[in-house]
Image (tube, rainbow, N blue to C red; front, side):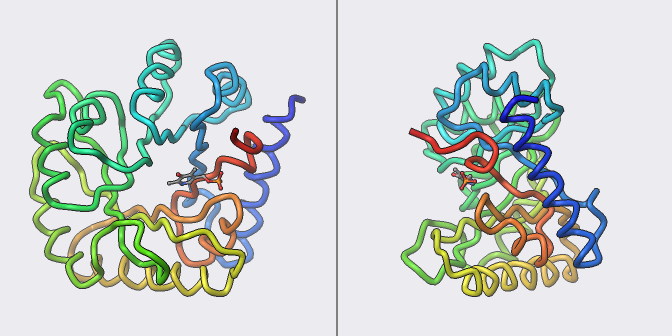
Length: 227
Ligand SMILES: *Cc1c(COP(=O)(O)O)cnc(C)c1O
């Protein structure tokens, strides 16, 4: 086995074990392999090991990879920050976008999504970290923005994303994940029909799964350190 396939097996095993320990079905949790700054050959290697969904942060880099890997039916997720002059490229090339943080962005993505493609799946990034803001929608505004976005024709609002500032304090991270879970449940109780909670990375995925994550975004633990 190659190192990447070993790492993928280890991560999938961690997801499986954590899910069962907290009474969830492992099938509820999807592993998104974050391949930013990693070459095409590495992504192919992960594909050969059974990985099907990949996340990228930089539009230009991602499009080069998407083009080079066109022979594989990969599900591509854009997880980087969204600049308004890049929304068209994002809408044209990706299946999912995780970091939508305004109604305006969602409008642009919806109007720029090509008509022959399925609606673009989107998650709203929530400003939940108590450290310096990395962007995101304020909790108080989420319901009204989500309601508006859910009416747009060419995007499908799937759920929420958290990108808390990195910390080794897992208890603090757990507090953030727990707030996300509450917000997610609250929005669903208002009829929003969300099925995705995108949170948890290499260092805190277990904590995220314990608080309801349905997509964990893992880079380093699969591919090693980035340059
Ligand atoms: C890079 C990145 C990840 C993966 O982080 P690792 O610590 O390498 O697992 C997840 N989500 C986002 C938004 C990222 O930018």
